[in-house]
Length: 556
Image 1 (spheres, helix red, strand yellow):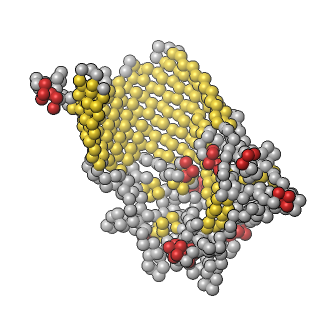
Image 2: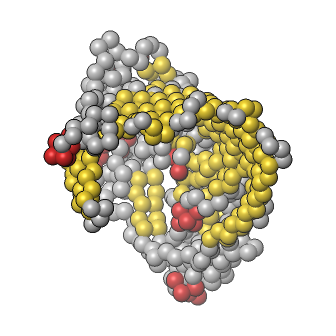
Image 3: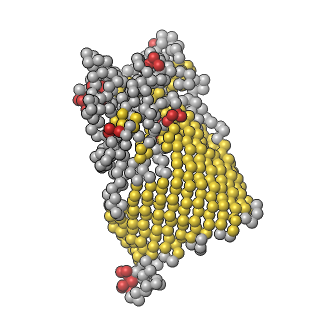
């Protein structure tokens, strides 16, 4: 069960006068979900085939060509032994509900899965799948690649390449589970917005924790009040067109420097959110503005997203020479996508206009414009055979053979944005899936910024009723990251068979506190008083505290 401010608010679409804890105490949830199902899927997997050839066309030019083909066999949901093959999935492309294996009438079976009509005929807007599959196998995942390297001088090389890569199987099993227990089976029930106040006289029109609907043996008359994460049955595999071009030069026998441009164009990315809400903002009953008024709002995912990545990557590498090995790498990059970033949006998801994904185009939640990483390993020149020879076996055992290594990392902060849980546009969304991004009317950085006041509350304001916010997605960033680790270690060998190694490690050796993301849940003030007391407060750090460890290992 989920509890929010709205259930104890005074009026409908008001999240400023209620309190989520109060909603919990008096037992008025905003939504609920029940699941009671054993799931199974038939076998599936990927068979990959790859062909590559490489040849040196001239003493200075080398070319390689390749092609990969992936045959991804999507498993079917359910097995006859589990009696859970009768499931369904919404197709919001045409407003239908697809049943993948049509069972008999409930009148004849007496329990789910069954069709709840007297004669077993499918209800209006419900269709039968022609092949019993939730998703279709794709047979055209050909991925050509070409690369070339040209030696300008004995110490300078230019290289480049381009190719296509498919994402065949990521989240596929999770997508299949999106249809688990769906109508005409009964393995999961759920409902949202069940306690939206109508007026002060009728504040709790819905369910309480004591009278939520029980799991029943028969499905509902139609499938259109289900609440789940449904997936477009026409979902396509995401793919990425990737390319690079760079130059590499050897400075001396141990040092190489390179500069490379790296880019990608990513298509058919998973894009999802709370779907079948009102297509446009406005007053009145939002369900009258839904694309399919007979279908309750629910989660839905489709392969319509796009993304791009472009970067300049510069690296200096020194192999171990004269006691020193080191790497310094710098990246200047930008990653852009739409709506949700990462695996099911796990890196960040804030979709304000579900029907206009181009309006959600912005930097990815994992975008890091500036990144500098340095690593080094230095063998101290003390001991037998070194520049400083102690000429003493005991002293050499104590001070000789030590090595020092380190790791330093500096990069831009992570993007995020401020959201308001109120349904200001009146599209029929739910408070626990906030979509409104408040407008910015002043400096978001307060005069005396601290972990308790990282954001200026007065710099934000809600858009006018029945409109969306004008602020872009991921328009703010966390603190710039700085961190350094180090290690000191020594290995002592005995008679070529035995060795003892001693290590001293220190993580975040400077003990720098890099703040995490602040609380970005906004709600408009009431009579000039803030209704979001924790707004802008940082309660975690991106970096851990300084940690020191000592270890020893004996090998034989």
